[in-house]
Figure (cartoon, each protein chain N blue to C red):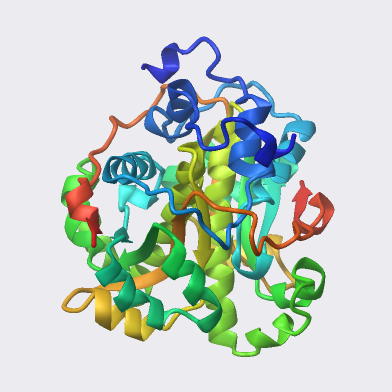
Length: 204
Length: 204
């Protein structure tokens, strides 16, 4: 579908879609046993990958933990309060950031053949990887909801242990970890307050 | 609308919505003069704010630069290649991260009254602010598209100068900057390649 050919390219999505993505979606802490197919995980990636990143650098890497064997490697590395739900969810994705992302820039950003060399500075490379892999994590959260899935993102885990267990022999580091599936209302927090527009924003 | 009461909570959005959000949306480098109302910016915040963050810490802060006077303060601080489009866009939002976010946790995460004290370590506080403000940046990108707006995110600017000009006397630092409006096809890059599922992901 050619987006620019849509007659309503500037129209908002309907309220049900905005509710599914934002206003009524909730972080889930318990999961039904309904499985998530490999085809759906591939579709999830195929939406996530189109979200914008700096120079199209797309530094996020995704390890979808689905088998009992792989879950058994991950669950003990989660914070105690995150273990039961991670064991229960049909899929848990480890979202990593690849510090070697500049190696892909000649392919990913062909407009500027020299872009790879802009990231020689290690601190700057880490900052760009962290920012853009986090953006991509946000895209995956909303892509999952757009596909009818629930998510439960978590930063409570042992990063060094997850790095050693799932990203040995690479420059990929874990960023955050997220359960994916079809959630239940069990252990659902009441919706927490949000900052008002005036507390978080200004218009100049 | 009660999300759990939706009969199709687990249904994907339709293809037109997925195209608007992900598959056909493009980073815009030129803008029509169609304005973006304050009401629409408030709606944009009211979607963005519901995206999940760690402990609901929502560290992103948003400065919507709309007036000629405010644009004149920002444009010279952008990288040269970002100046013309930033001057042209009806709105440019500076997305900052507030290192004082723990002060709001007693309000934002009432379930755990002690959560504020978990961020005494400065490096850990910065890491959480950076990760979660970036996630919120991702939510705002997709919320804007969900509202029929186009975006053009940028990390090419002078961070120290933007900090001094727009966030003096606070612990807010700029994260990235994004044009918002109704884009044109002028200066549109060809769609760049994306990493294959196999290059970026694995299923265990």
